Image (cartoon, rainbow, N blue to C red; front, side, top):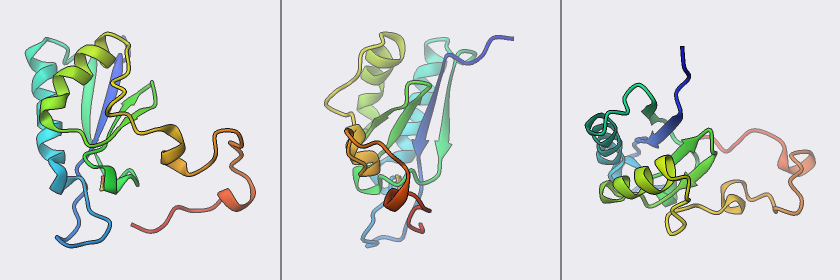
Length: 128
Ligand code: FES
């Protein structure tokens, strides 16, 4: 059986209104997920591309957050209206949607010229 071609994770994590970290649910996360699922179904890709709900991806201030695997490309500030562009340009066309991409260095805080995960960079992430 063939593997899925792409896997799209969409954060729909919710926090209380007023929480300083914010959350993707209040940034249209659920609507973004549904837009991906509808686009995939409408275009006949259900057996090739999956869009799944995700918990917090630790980029909360940049919601809605979307990750495309296996490419390991992260997008932030995604709205339902961005879904056709991500699907057509990136998922099908292989071209990044640069205006929505979260730079790699912002994901981890680890400088690109020192990608070590040893020492002070090691350890558990902050609690949710
Ligand atoms: S709530 Fe979506 S990344 Fe944290």
